[in-house]
Amino acid sequence: MSKTFSFACVHFAVAFTVGYLLTGSIAVGGTVALVEPLCNTVAYHLHEKAWAWLASRRAAEADAASASAALPAAA
Image (cartoon, one colour):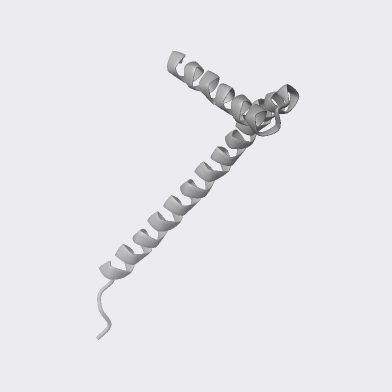
């Protein structure tokens, strides 16, 4: 848990620094530091759902292929 918290602190610090350096505004830097990780969290969730869907689709296709391969050939 400490490593996760440490990474979150680094992430916020980097987001703030980039926002501040690009705009010169502490308010914008702070907003970026709060909004960017939230957007990344939502994007990561959607990314994981897409990969899970793709994995289940590939598994279903593999099951269908092995089931059809197991059928006896028509004479």
